[in-house]
Structure formats: structure tokens, C-alpha cells
Length: 255
Image (tube, rainbow, N blue to C red; front, top):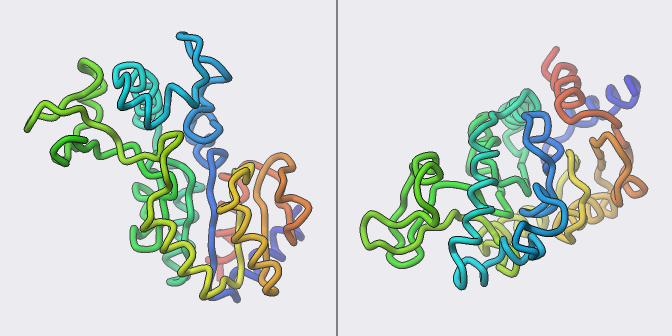
């Protein structure tokens, strides 16, 4: 493991353009439950007997906002109850050292921003849990914690419309700007791509790894267990994201 860690650190020190892809395994080290998409805080069915994908969907938010918000609120409380960990901080430090290091995250907790990752090099492909905004008038409301402590669904102070977070719910499209940014950077190419704490079940997560490998770039997976990516990366660093990332950054910034 140590020799592989040193090998990755050496490549990253020499690399100019780097993409770090992060999933729920990174925030698990902050105490957040890992989850599949938005819904894996729950396994299978809700109390109402619905698949969680149905409860946390765009159509459900329109049809039965109180039901959708029952589960959105649980996600929100989980995100607010934890904080960024040393893994997030190590990534932000790498971005400080490498001005062309990008982060593509599936996580909605906002921890990359809180840890210091520059927003202009952060692609939140599934959105973020806050700030809320009104579906009727567009007014923004930043006090997520206050809304979660009150009656659900939360309503707009301006017009009384129902608020929602800027997350991608099931059956909703990915944000166009995030997709455009990702593919614009992919076209420029990356010297190295690191996948951290994700099962890589989405094409837009797997594709950067595959394209970079095919173009001769270096690919790394950081995960305690094997995933669909494991057979196709150059190096699989087996372990908790927090520990491995701290180790990497200590070697990269230690000189």
C-alpha cells in the first residue's frame, strides 16, 4: 500500500491537470451515512410503502410536497449535523497546490465548499442541499436549519410558495451548467483522475476515468472495497478516503 501511495503521490506532483471525483464514501468519514443517489439513507421502501426513488422525485415534490419534504428534511438534517473532514481539506489543499485541479462531486452536503475548494473548480453534479429557493417566485432562503425545525414543506416568506433545495431529485435532469463545464474540461484532457469513495454507477462518473485512461492519463481509485472501476484503473488504494487522502497530501506537500 505504501509503495502504491508513493507512486500515486509522485504522479500527482508532476501532473498539471487533475480531476478528483468524489462520492458518499468521502463524507462517510464525517459521519454521514453513505447513500445511493439521493435515497440510500434508506434501504428500499419508505414508511408509506413507496420506493425511496419515488418519494424523493421531482414529480412527488409537485404532487405531494409534504411527503417529499419528509425525506428531504432527513437528508438536510444529516448534512447539517456533520462537518467536512480531513479528506475534504486534503482535496482543497491539493487544489491550492495545483491551480488546474478540479473536483467533480456527487455529494449534496456542500462540504467541499466549506473545506475551501474554490467554487470555480467545483462541479456539483447533483446540486447542493442549500440554499433553498421558491419554486413560484425564485426568491432564495438561506436558513435551511430554521426551515427544517418548522412546518414542512417550508414556504416562501415573499409569496407563500413551496421552497425546494437546488438538488437533483429522481426523474429530474442534471444541471446543464455542471454538465457543460464537466465536458468542456474533459475535452481539454486530464493528466490524472482520482475516484474517491464512489461506486461509480453513473456514466458521467465512469466516463472521465475511461477517457483519461484511454488517452494515456493516470487513473486512481480510493475505496475500501472493489467497485466497477477497480479493474480499469491504474492503481486501487484500498482504505478510508480520509486516511488515504491525508497520506497523499503529506507526500505531495511535504517537500
